[in-house]
Length: 184
Image 1 (tube, rainbow, N blue to C red):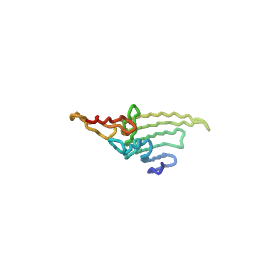
Image 2 (cartoon, one colour):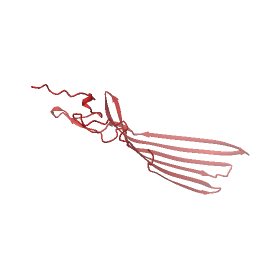
Image 3 (cartoon, rainbow, N blue to C red):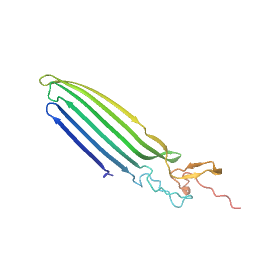
Image 4 (cartoon, one colour):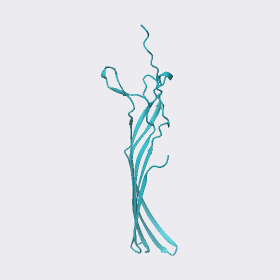
């Protein structure tokens, strides 16, 4: 769809022979909610009628990305490098499961990736550099799935509630047909 907001900032500080420091921060927001994409469009002729007024496949996440890199003695025969990156994505998204009836699922995103970088460059001969790099990546995924809120119905006898499925079109027997009681 495009037009989602994003921002960024960069900084660079260096002293020619001593150090070179670079930092950046980016922020990104994704709001995808196209109401007609995979919307079951529950007809008003169904009994009961429950209109789906939002997309069951919405995606509304925020990402924050930071990068920091430091080079020490960038023009010497031995150069030291260190860096850190942080990437975090949070926010809700909705999807559906197509097993018999379409259940609305809510997925709360919370993922984090931390990356650490260390390196050494040795200039041993003209036009020859030996590099050693070490990368450490740590991922944490706290993303969960749960039944999303759409339309709750009371169970008989006060036994609790149940979440109805997305498509409700009883005239076309989706997910089921309501048989009225026989006339007396």
